[in-house]
Image 1: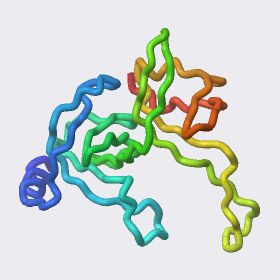
Image 2 (image 1 turned 90 degrees about the vertical axis):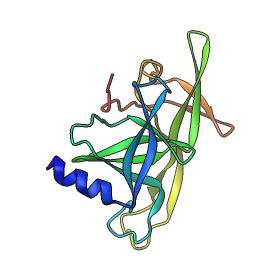
Image 3 (image 1 turned 180 degrees about the vertical axis):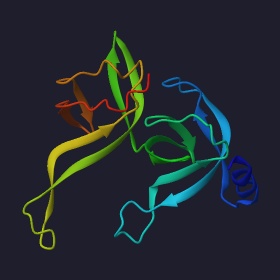
Image 4 (image 1 turned 60 degrees about the vertical axis):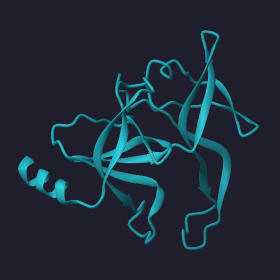
Length: 171
């Protein structure tokens, strides 16, 4: 199988160099070559979302996990899904700043408003923002101490952490 992948990889027009974080939370990146594909974010969407990419690795034994970070197209991207020998990464669209032991840390993050619907009929629904946001960050030695009830300022509004999903723990 590796020989087949090598031949396809060597003849592919979508091979690009991306920076891969050398250790979780290090912010140090080393260059690797991957195949980069655009991604549709839903089955019904006929448009590609510019904030998602699929990275296909040449080496079938390459190590990756949810939460791994990459540097590509001038942005930091976080692995949000794994599919066999490839990953789906999402572009970080903001940073989250916080103090830990009197030191200010700033980490790349993905912020998205939490959208709710005002009914069950999805053909006639009006989506509304409920005042909450979902923030995705890499779980690492810097971020692991963020706890429920921690407060953050995002876009001039104060938010409180109400729940933490650390199922992507990779330390």
